[in-house]
Image (cartoon, rainbow over all chains, first blue to last red; front, side):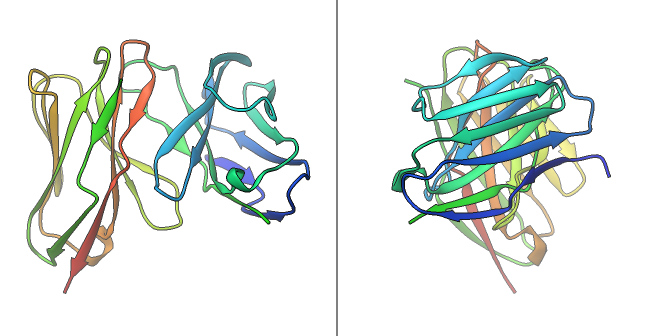
Length: 114
Length: 109
């Protein structure tokens, strides 16, 4: 199946821990994103990579570090987790960033920090 | 600042028509998108408008007026499966997507 897949789907962890979320797309897209959706349902862009290069880095704590080993993968590592990091994290991809280029989202990773 | 405004919640009856409005204030405009998001799932693409006017796609239509900073999504012949959140997003002059908080649509039998 052609898709954006992210793992894990659910992640429950303690404050202060370090965790990673992995994302892979087999759509042949050149741009990948990480979004955070909080309890108020706003989708906030965190990072965007185009052909493995960072093109958007919104104001997120530097505890969040994206890594793109190739253009089909964009992983998110979070250090020293805090309660406020609890949210659903969506990975997405698109072909380019202009025109009618549509984002295809992964199913989301629900992170709960206790 | 940039912002997208949509009603928080709407209720409609199965078989009826509903219009979800979106107003935006952004630095530049390079297209407007509507996405559907069922509870606990990923957003999925519904429509794209870059020129003024109406785009029709089956039961769903989307309208844009750039001079008014306004769009709406029209859903006809509502079905129970249309119960979801509908997200409006605008691409600004830097080609960044600015998202609204979404409108939760509740369909009643």
